[in-house]
Length: 208
Image 1 (tube, rainbow, N blue to C red):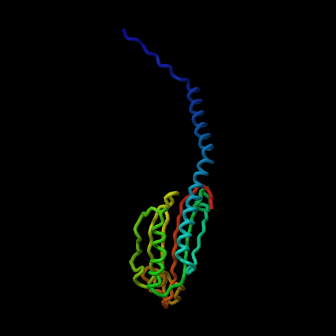
Image 2: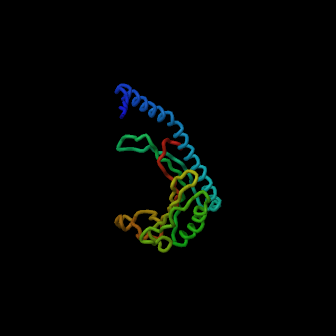
Image 3: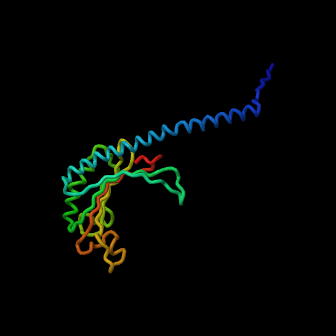
């Protein structure tokens, strides 16, 4: 003889109370976890700063006071139109600029500093050194550049090394493309070499 099985249904009021309780719990966990996530994010960028200071120290040792290198950290608010999103972009930046007059000077600078950066144990190499089109960097005294991407191991932040040769001053008798586009001849053999190692990523706060 078949038995009838009765399934008790929860009252709608009780179901609503359970749903409300779950939502409140989720919201509470979210706000409680905010300081923890902020602290983890801050620690991440502090690790990046510490690593970049080590790279900067190695570069300055290689320079031996012959070139002026600079290091700075900064954070800027992320914007949507005129409104802040609440997030930031934090950057650790190592830079050097100087006038150059020959391809030999450029290659000498590249040979002195690039191996220091490329061999730093705190970096994972993401790409090969990539001369930008038309692939004239280090070959001709023209507007040109090369770049390479890394991942800083302790923070996971992506870094980019860029070395570029540009006009030291604009020739007013030439068009923009003749002055600044890759492959353009450097005016009167006076160029400006710019070398940067930049690590940048979105952050939860202004940690620098």
